[in-house]
Amino acid sequence: MNYKKLIFILGITVLFSSTLLSQNFKYIGATKCKMCHNKAAKGEIYNLWAAGPHAKAMESLKGDEAKDPKCLKCHSTVGHVDASLIASIKVKEGVSCESCHGPGSAYKSATVMKSQELSLEKGLILPDEKVCKQCHNEESPHYKGFNFAEYAAKIAHDDPSTD
Image (tube, rainbow, N blue to C red; front, side, top):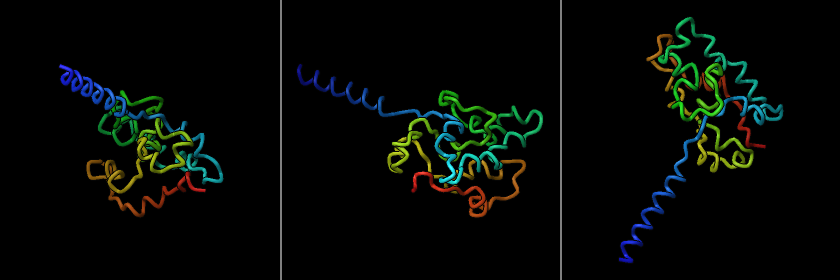
């Protein structure tokens, strides 16, 4: 009987600990990123984003397109994420930092961001061509081709964790 109790307790422990470890990282919005990512010494990354096409992606939609889920999935970070993962991000932000870098709720702190390994564990994504092509692809009615190297260079910004 003690053996069965031990197995039961171990099973419950494993189930409970796996629930704690399986986090759903939340989307917090570009204004939360701005606090640290808009310093002149780090290239004013927030300002680069705000002046660029990703921040203005919603402005390019006309009429009913601004409410069409087919359009929103690429023109707004909110449009392609599960509603339960939205913390403070808004549709009007367009394609925010988190579309490319992943939901920031767990990696936003400076303590975590100092370690790329820890940041990756906490949901940070290092965007590559595959990430970009989730939206920049032939499914879009406005697709005009996509040269990853060329377009990545246009939005390139310093790694803010470097000194």
